[in-house]
Length: 348
Image (cartoon, rainbow, N blue to C red; front, side, top):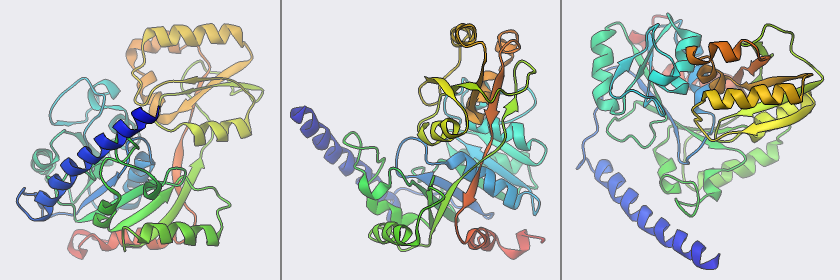
């Protein structure tokens, strides 16, 4: 075990050299970064895994879309397609990836949802096909240095803050902690509601070692269960949790505090659902006939694939929508975002 840890840290040192060289080349302009005439707002993190980027993008959509036309741009992780694509009625999680499919399902007709591995290539295509677009939200693009955002939001999980983490493979950092300095604002996500002013101050002091930008703290607001399977009332007696996300602990804790959990089907991040998965759920439904299934919204958008219509129709399936909830000074965060938009682009 000790030898393995030493190897991990040796590889982390090598990884640091590679990522630091790459960032230096971009910082000095040796490798070019594309800039655009409209606001490009980047949401990302320093770590692998979930820090709450999806609900943050949705918060920004709700804040901005009534003011002017907005587009979201994601890589489209886990999709079965390649290249640039603007979401349409024929698309789903298979063609877009789970997060963009969720954006399209919730905001179709109000925002443009696009995917593309190369954001510097995708943005001009969005502007060509959606000429009225006045702002672009980049999902999970903190390390995509080929585009120079006009405003950058860095997210850090309260339970695994970047300042306590290490570079891959010794830890979960994609790049060194010092690169938090590129952010215009840092949001500590998934905070407990009861977090004290003293603890916030300690966290902010730790962040200040790496970045001088404003720091905000947010939690998660959980909605009511929404049915997407067999049309039954959600059972308060027993539930089976199904998750295919990176960090399911906060979701599981919330469900366990609200319902009687008899089983947790824990799947990998960005899990691709199959008919075998639904066969397993049907077996659990027979084993626990009084239980209903509760999953995340990100899992739901993959489970509603037409391929599973027949299997889904006989299962009591529910998902829990979530939203970002700022614990303090949320209006100041929103004001920062609106100030990042030039007045001539913001008719309000």
